[in-house]
Length: 163
Ligand SMILES: CC(C)(COP(=O)(O)OP(=O)(O)OC[C@H]1O[C@@H](n2cnc3c(N)ncnc32)[C@H](O)[C@@H]1OP(=O)(O)O)[C@@H](O)C(=O)NCCC(=O)NCCS
Image (cartoon, rainbow, N blue to C red; front, side, top):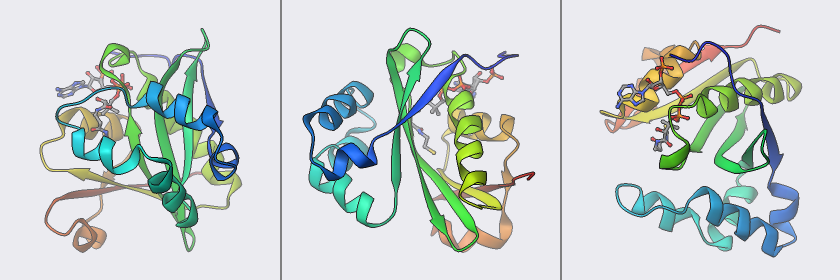
């Protein structure tokens, strides 16, 4: 049970990404080093081209850095009208269950408010219990109105941000 969030910083990857810097790829390798269940996820997003496409689509990636300046994960946000979507959340195995995802979501909310976003949404695949727990803990609830957006593959969770 995490009572307090660990100290984290979100490092924007997009400026670095568009310049095609090696730093971005290096950081992404730190964030997505694992193979296995997330193979598809990783291979779909690891290359600079995919990340760059994401960037064109308005998806803003951040590396999550802890107090010891280690990269402990990644997260992205993209606006849609007055709403925003949070996704690409990934914490490598060895850093899980230390509150980093919760801290990153909370920090991303601050960023979302600055962008004028009123409600944040997240798609979560069926059976992804760690993710469901994490988003529920962060104050997200199942959004039946956006159910169709999950295309039968999962559930949309949403949270209205307090401005
Ligand atoms: C989901 C994920 C981001 C969570 O990261 P994390 O840093 O471990 O999350 P936190 O430490 O902030 O909180 C995890 C919460 O989930 C709970 N949790 C962890 N594993 C769980 C499991 N198998 N079943 C249910 N809950 C679980 C933890 O107990 C904790 O809640 P608690 O603080 O009340 O105990 C991480 O597991 C991950 O990267 N998974 C693979 C990628 C993924 O699924 N991304 C999300 C796509 S929507």
